[in-house]
Length: 282
Image (cartoon, rainbow, N blue to C red; front, side):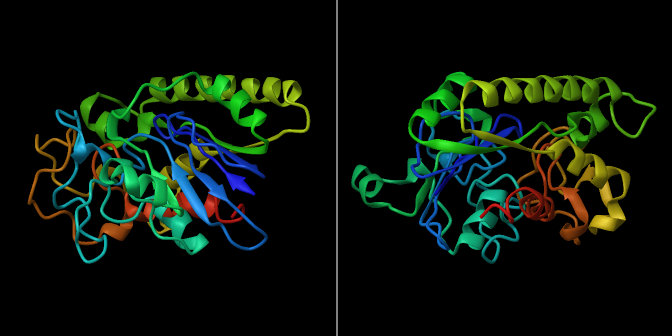
């Protein structure tokens, strides 16, 4: 069996199949799976899953290879991940008993050929390469044998700290931004219905990432969070609208923050995301 996911601003497709493909939509997790073991993970995406590709790109718009990023990763090692610790891809790998997929830009040509447990193509700001239309990729992947897709919709962007601190608002989240996210998610649901009818024998499962973030913002204590509106780290602008300032100590209790920087989820949120959307699939 295989497992693939595609990401744009936390928007994911996944598929389960008897074959795997590493075409290049915006965040693909491809997990080859036998009865009880998944031997490989291939991940394509943006900053949510980047494990260090951008630090190998000259002139990359975004790199995160410095503390406090990675402060809780393997004893405090910054790798280019945009969070304090592990990402959802890392949790998938751990659950499957696999090493974390190495960033593709860190591998030589020989290593690319010999690495059999998976590769991470994720790049902050999707800086590695242009991505073709997702529906075209789905048809291509279906042609390779994929028959089961799990799709995560878009989270409520109007609840992210960067926008809460950048734009004036009188509600807990920015209503207009979230309405646009809901509109997108409704269109996504319609597209999946059309695709399921067009691709006979194929199942599409929608993982409601929007509801996960919405529930965490509404009832943070139930999920173990105390702060869902602020960044854990101190950003370079000092106003919660930029990336973390290099070398500045972040908040002490990072497990209770939903966001590590103004844009990206904390390790705790990545873990919750994995538990909701992926744990029962693997």
